[in-house]
Image (tube, rainbow, N blue to C red; front, side, top):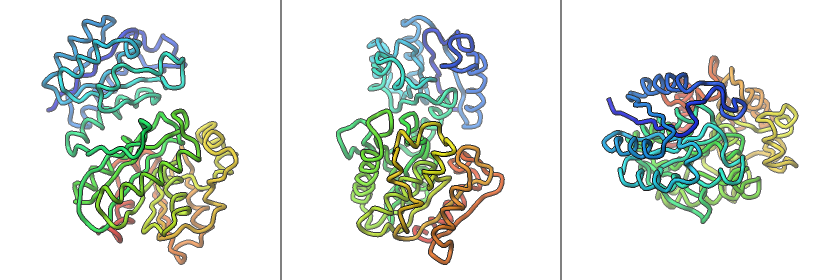
Length: 370
């Protein structure tokens, strides 16, 4: 069983007591048990290390030279330690940087990471779930490593490409209420599954609220990335699949694109910004992204091309009423709109390619990509 070394830095031994409003209520031992459980589910053995001493953390990194990967939460050493940066580069083992809190939204000094340039991914602001995301990324990277391309100068203007061939590629747009705490790693399971089946697929990152985003910058990034993905994947057409706020962006692109998009699949999407704002979905997310609701699909007409909408009936994050109401406003199946509401399915279940929700999404794609 492949081993992943989880390295935790200074003051993390005080989890559960230290600022629980920032770092959560889990103790370090409870966090370790949870991470080991996630490792078992992914077929990984977890070696767990915590130290308050920089030298011990450097040695822990050295000990991971022959492992499948490193998950590192360096604590405050994140912002000062060149030694950790050099150690990560020296072992040449893929490492994911994790922070429980949203370091980009706190004190200015926390926004600089010396270890990030030596890591393949940084995950922050997701609490304990960030460790799970890190493990998943390491597994996906081992199964099908991406080719990384840049479509602009901003650090977030990147895309991960996998697979090749076919006449139609797939572009994946992740969600997260347009917040920079959520990234393209959330749709990597989809990407790896599609690429394994011989589909050319690109997962796009974009500027989000907290990292230079907002409706002008974010929608411009999505449009530019989709256009560039078509060239880089070497396909004449693409189908665009978005999850949650990414579904909103996928539909908005279909509404605003100069030529009809072959297929748009919205998964657990937000399509009525006014209602989302009224119900405070993702507290403060809608006003932060688009305070005047100028990108509201519900009030923008019919998108070009075919539209498929998939939602979980038991979604506690974005209610399925968003999808049902939007589908009805467009005239339903007779108007080239497919609406699927899945019983017993929650918001994040749809991101897991092992679950039935992904089968419904694949079925929507099947008419186009086979």
